Image (cartoon, rainbow, N blue to C red):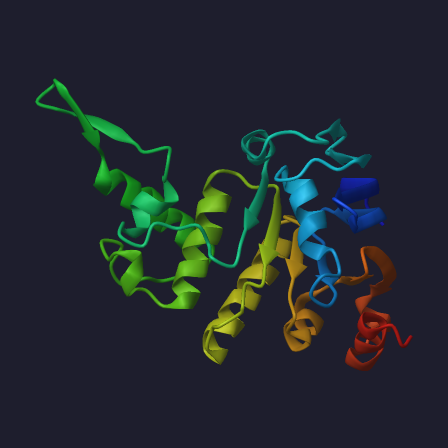
Length: 247
């Protein structure tokens, strides 16, 4: 197996008297899709937030490409190439596609050689190139995101992460509330990331989606990892048994 690009060792996180994550080891290799599974309260989201810098673990270390990133700020972790796409996508629905890809990093041009204004057309052109890489077609990039489908919004969020050179993608329930055709498109995007060598951590309650794209399934229960199963050895029945503690 290739050397892991992300390694978490002995991660623990407490909230008062509650232990949310308890001495967890977790790793992801290049071009690997790892599904992180478990019931509500199993510790999945807390572990991800320890990796992405939202929380600082009480114990343990997180390293990415050989560098210790434990407790670093989310902005620094994003700068290093770890992108987290949460269920709410964190997009600006009142702006168009290009503006969302460059949100917070807008391109500008000089108007009449004096005023600095946003270069909307250039941002749309750059966004179009990123979407083309993912084989995504949006009829007009001038449309505001509020007018796009759920699958198209997911594509914009992924295109933004890729444009800014994401080297690890964390996706939290990416197919939730999407219609079946759009779910398939998102799964195709995950496969495309894998083929590009970009590892993906996938959090999902939809086992059918997980079984369709994951290379490995890590199952958490009550803050601990209870199973780490290669896809070839996994079945939906076995996964459910681990999730509910019956395995």
